[in-house]
Image (tube, rainbow over the protein chains, first blue to last red):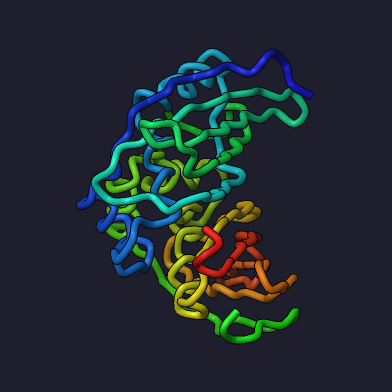
Length: 131
Length: 134
């Protein structure tokens, strides 16, 4: 059950950095021949976006723990190309959870992918010095 | 599909890791996920873990090369996973897959990543389609 209306974030103009995509592929066992399916996880961690999550968690005195992640593609991402990332963030109380749903589209508006991340919100007590 | 895929088909298992601290640090740097839970022994110990857990995304993303090696003639249209139990630094990880549904236009594969305890660390799914379909 959502606690409050979802919050819309963005759109954020993001680029598939070829060097970073290749590095991400190497660190996940790939061959860098194509942009990894999971590459947009990098975008979700970008400070311009994730700062909203971090600030909310600070207010709630909780730590976000990655619970699930999904990527659904209409078209593969292309290294060197830019995309617009539009995010909807919603919060549930039981269990305490944040859900980020992001759509990826070309600058011309053609949909490419949909990404969903669920973050379980765990009380900071017990996480020691985690920040 | 150029080669038939049947419900119940098992993908060849892939063994990855064990991942050491520098490996987790490299993933943190490239991904931007610098959560100290994955990098700092004191933080993981504070919640009762024997070692920092490997980033779930590092493991979920590792299914992609396994799927491409299995059926490079298909496009992976979706990849999803639930991080159900931490897999810790130093553990060998086994990636497995089994076909749950197969039609002319789509193959659904159940994915599981196991750590040292052989208990599932990630339970996921992938959808693969003929190249012309995406």
